[in-house]
Length: 258
Image 1: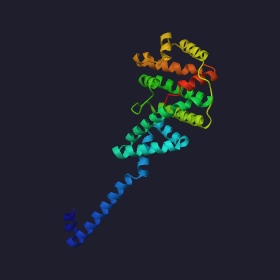
Image 2: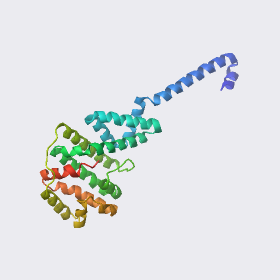
Image 3: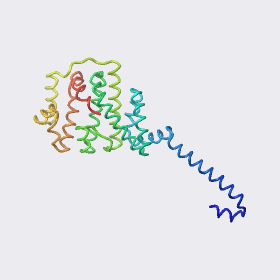
Image 4: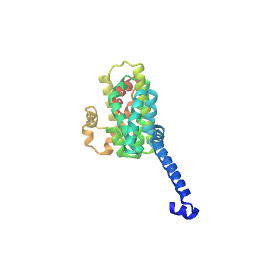
């Protein structure tokens, strides 16, 4: 670049001075730009932009901030660390999803003490998710039934929005359980029998119902279609029960669902 400028102006000394000043200004600008890309504000903006494509995670993220601010601060720090380590917003989302998994394993049992209304709201949200996944993607429906969905599972945006709504309800229910825990007895034998009868009437076999109440280990050997069908029935059957009974069962059955 210096040679071209020399030919154009014919004043080497001036050009050298200009070149040094220009280079210094360019380097300072590049440095400022590089630093600017890694400010907390810039990183957070990039992660927020990525979350627009992950509405289920975004719903969990914002609700955690509202209901569990200290945990949200830890989550945010972990996500920013992941971005600085790998340089990709999606890596931050994956780290955040792992944080939520641990958070729910640690705090999920709190859900069992949520008010009846919140448990029934969660029941309805889980039914909506299962029905949509069953209609759109049998494999994801089966995964949702057996283990919940992870960061590499990519349902449609419409399904993600329903999953996000369910996650929001779950976190709100947990916060309500902490603020005002509901004391309730566990499911009675009559509750379990009534629930089993509904699942049988909806199409599950006696063997599937028995397996369901014994850890669903046999279900893991079944096809994705069978797993999806059983999951859909198990959720929908709760809606066919009286609310008080559904709340006692849902407090246990829905506590582990992310």
